[in-house]
Length: 471
Image 1 (tube, rainbow, N blue to C red):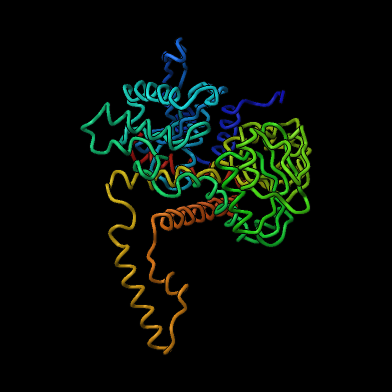
Image 2 (cartoon, rainbow, N blue to C red):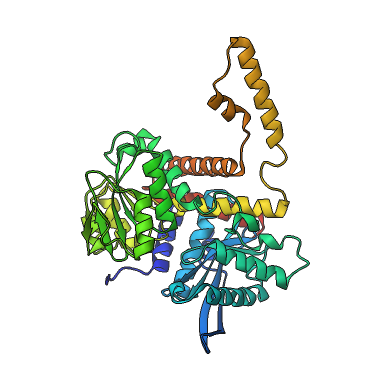
């Protein structure tokens, strides 16, 4: 969509400026925290189908107030240096908000992964890994990438294997990247993590009646009508969990080729996802109205607008027509700075990306801990929990002189699996972070919305880290 809004990076910087204006920080520190510390651009050739193609990629490091720095690698034809720098800045702020001890970074490779087969993508990924690692932009102690748009567990496994071949004596080599398959040192629950974080963040929002009152909605998530833009990894998992576990109704899904709508019965997210994978679009999905101009569906009436696609989807051009009282930014930067101002003036409540999108990096942190500790979660304590649980069941049965139902007994004696522990840690992280954000929002007169509050939380933590380091 053509508009005169600020770029993604400019929008983030203006949001940063708006938040930092409420703080009493030294000017030099304000300048340092605003800009990326380093950006590495690489160009490399790979032989594809009998001819050489030259690929361009970037790795941006925003802040090293904590090490290693952390941030995904995306494969997309629209990747640019400005976008990578913007995403790296967001990573610094996200990590600080959820108390993950990483600095912020991001990587990108300019290509459309659909144009290449698996073997070609492996060659490209391994060459990109080689060039980044040679300059210290992949390292378990310095810079740890993760999946992003266009990449997933397979690409992360290739990166880990290539790094191990380059540095065979590094005992922590497997920790050089997160988002790996569980069989390759990954952690259960990483694929769903960002979407699951969106669910936990929304749940926490709806636990606070005074926050919900700002949206003019009532009750919890159950029955809320949700429009989802983008049914990729994040949008799929968030929509699926909100529908299946919290009782929300997904009334519309917007994809590249258009949108499908079923206001009355809602949409089955899993069925739509299968159809999308098989048909490369949502057109023709049964029992739903297809709207070719899917972007217009952003303006439809709903309770929650869940943005899980690309940046810059709501701009100054369409912001005034958005009717959702609550917007959940599951993607990075889906609302421009100008649109954000318009929406706030309209009374729209926005749960910001810098918080709501942090589930992925939180679980990546758990995976990194698992890798550098060289022990899987639950291995040391799982059997102890089972024995204790059995003793509790026996005590209950002895006191009541009746058998505990089998399903309850299994829950008490089962012990926590790795997935249980990951989900528990993520849930606790998202709840604590939201309460800290709303605490700032509710207590500081100059902080007028949740986005500004989230930035204030992160900037105070980053500034404190730099000050304690003597910078």
